[in-house]
Length: 194
Image 1 (tube, rainbow, N blue to C red):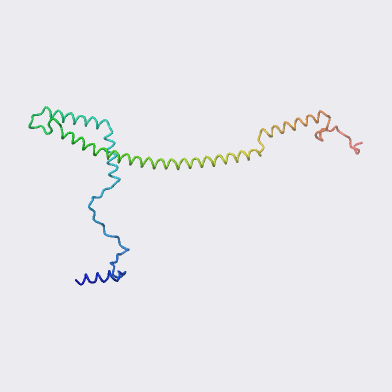
Image 2 (image 1 turned 90 degrees about the horizontal axis):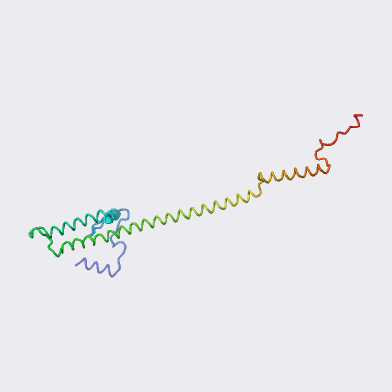
């Protein structure tokens, strides 16, 4: 009874930090007990993908067909006391329903995992495309800058055309009787040579 009275007194006055049980923050909590068994979702997903892959093969269809044919032949032609599923084949229907009830969620789980992988791949492809576009835009700007810079640089064709223009001017000047180079002047006598 004393503990009830202490509890009521604490509730009336309000609990303080000294009255609450202390939890140590420097130590991990003890593991909780779970009623549901734990499993690795990644391993379960891989198993479901393997099963879904097998269910989607021709081998599975052939084996399932063989099992059903053997089941039907046995339950039709075997002696009565050895038949385990007589004519309406209720047990066969139950087994096929059970197989379908497990196959559908496993296939959906495998599809969800594939969709997650596809989503990650699409995101990586999108980022790669963005990087490629940025690189292409950068290279385009660089090429444009080089073209603009090359517009100011003397090219071989421009120099050739300038030389041809100079040669044409010199030939015209020579044709007019003008002296182009001082060495081409007629020899003249110096006053001292007389």
